[in-house]
Length: 94
Image 1 (cartoon, helix red, strand yellow):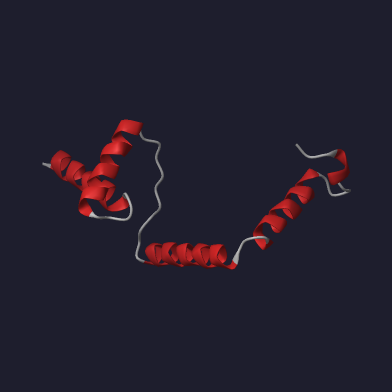
Image 2 (cartoon, one colour):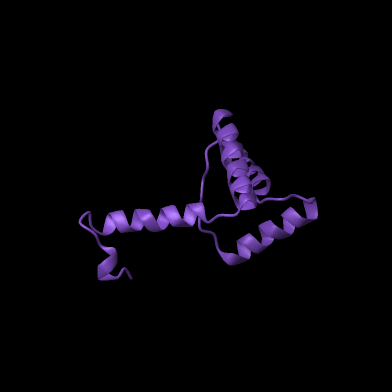
């Protein structure tokens, strides 16, 4: 909730921008480096034609994906999900 004294002549939107600005400037140097690293990685992926896709999945399915990920020694879920989607598309195509 925003207090009345936080709303200036520019309204609530301006006060939210200033809160966001404070949050961004209070990040530690390590957090800034990690964020920049993620941004660079995603930019490289976009340049390679990859598209970020987000989905809500049932917990039991995510648990199985995580199990497969851990068994394979992977850091993320994306390779498991990508392979599963490829298998599905190939199976439906024949």
